[in-house]
Image 1: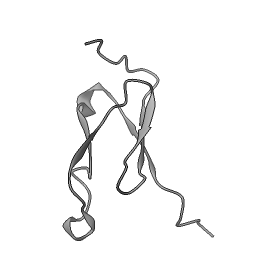
Image 2 (image 1 turned 45 degrees about the vertical axis):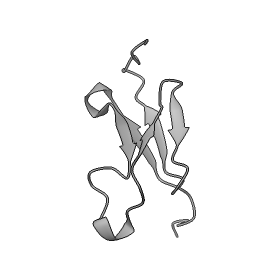
Image 3 (image 1 turned 135 degrees about the vertical axis):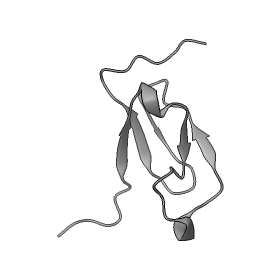
Length: 64
């Protein structure tokens, strides 16, 4: 049985930057205010829903 309390992990690449939550595939009924997620350190979590976002290993974050 799947544990529904574990927040999902979404791997993102350069084509997905900038990363924001809720993403484009999130149903409108379950949306929260849009927040941008800083994945420059490899992984980050949405403060609203807990969804985890991980930068794919083959993606190099831009240095600003």
